[in-house]
Structures are given as structure tokens and as C-alpha cells.
Length: 211
Image 1 (spheres, one colour):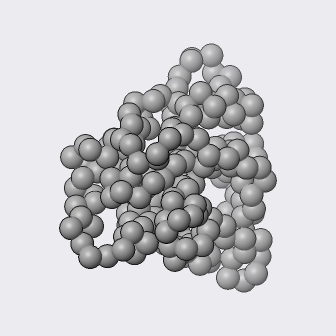
Image 2 (cartoon, one colour; image 1 turned 135 degrees about the vertical axis):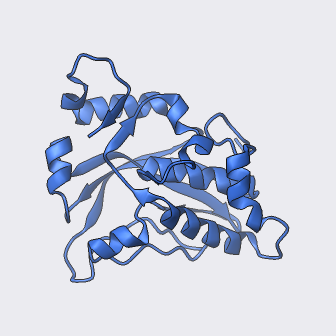
């Protein structure tokens, strides 16, 4: 797998993704500098929202996700991967389970837990090595929870805000599911069913949940 190809999900040849990345084409900037700029653009252009979950493959195309104003970590990771691939930077999706410790009342109400599974991040291959980066939490959300936004220097992993500015525990990684060649819809569905069975107990067979 070259992690550069366009796929059904990472459809960077679409007009919407091309419009997102056009300012970075025909530039003298290095791949590392471009990756840093695109990361910030995706991090802050879509508001983080963990309460809308879908298991319909049509809703995980980068071109469709980019038309929205908000998205959860997997959504934003897909957009970032499509942008990076479209700019010649190999990228792939990486999933994990995380635990949040600040602002969790609604999480517990909706999910029955402060653990979020199918947490999405990105692996990007830059200057000869793979690095991890998470575009999930936009700067305004971080300000709300008194957490420093995650920056990305193009060289080192940028995936974890362990503490807020007061030194209180904010977030921890509980389990690493590793990376996938493409968006693993069936894996995500089964994983969510295992962790949040009450969401699926409606008997409706629905594939989207706005909690």
C-alpha cells in the first residue's frame, strides 16, 4: 500500500478537496511545512463534535465530510488524510480508545462512559518516517476546557493532551487499535456495539446516531 492513492473515502480528486488544498499546490514549501499548515487548517476549520456517529459508508467520504461545519475525530482525520494524499504526502488512519477526564458529564450521559472508542488520528509519512497527529480538538474547544491546542511540528508525534493548563488530567490513551489501509467501517461498527450497546438497542437498525 502506498498510502498516496485516492480511494472511495479519501477522494482527494473531488472538487471540494481540491479547493481545500489548492493554496498549497505549486509552492516552494517543503512537504513538512505543507503538512504543518494543512494540519492547522483541518484542526481549526471544523468544530469538534463527538455526538454524531455514523456507520454508513457514504457519510465517511472526505468530500462529503468537508462540506460540514463540524465533525468528530474520525471525520477530521479522514479530511486531513485526503488533503495530505492530495498533496503527495502518504497518510493513513489510526484508531484507538481514549478516556477523557474533563467536561465528561455529557459524554457519560450519552455514552454511559467517559471512554471514547474509535478515536481517530492520522499517521503521515514525512521526511522518511511515520508520525502520528490528531486534528480532533479545534482551538476554540481547547480554550473552553483550558487546554493548550495540539500543535504539530512536522517531525514529532502530536496526539495527546495529557493535562490541562492547571495540571489536571485531561486525556489518556487506553487501547491502540493500530492503523488501517482504509476507513474500517465494519470494525468501527462492531467496536461501537461492544462498548455502547445501548445505542443499538432501539431495534430500528439505524446506521446514524445523533446523541
